[in-house]
Length: 89
Image 1 (cartoon, one colour):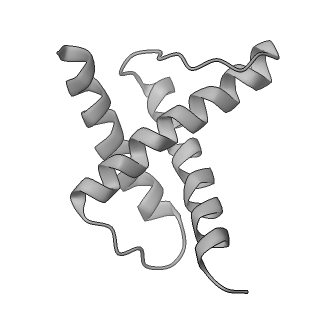
Image 2: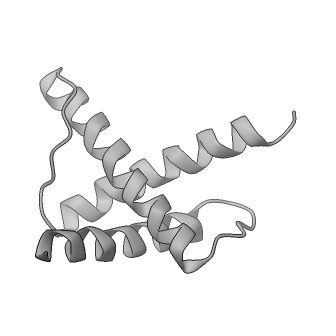
């Protein structure tokens, strides 16, 4: 139960920070921001694992500063890919 709450908190915090950093206006609700942050945490965690160990793994490091930074980077990558896929060139 506490892990789920930690993921929700991490998702909201990382999603809000990523939306503040990413240029332009994103029309996400609080739920959309949370989902963005959670997906960002998965993407960032997988990229971090791939770059540091050479292996693809989905693991959580808990709710700490390092996890938030990795989740924000993952959320920024997710936003970039989302807008490249959905916006016409």
